[in-house]
Length: 101
Image (cartoon, rainbow, N blue to C red; front, side):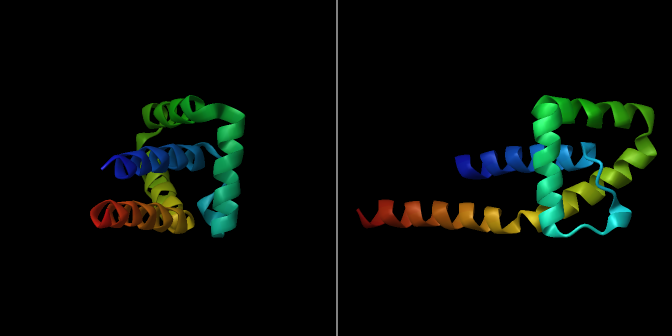
């Protein structure tokens, strides 16, 4: 169960970072651009700084923030889908080895 819990945390941090980034929906970013924007936002603001920006935006402009958060969540899911599948495959492999032993 722990890898799923960690994936949720990582996904939430990535979503907050994309939300806090300068990348815009109108840019129609590629997966690589989303990944770079997430990394840049985390480097610039840190995990907590990204979360603070999300919180502030929801307080100041909730109707706009909801739309941006939905967009960010979807783009993060798409851009990092490979890493989620790799983590799931790793977990399944560990379970298989444990049963075989």
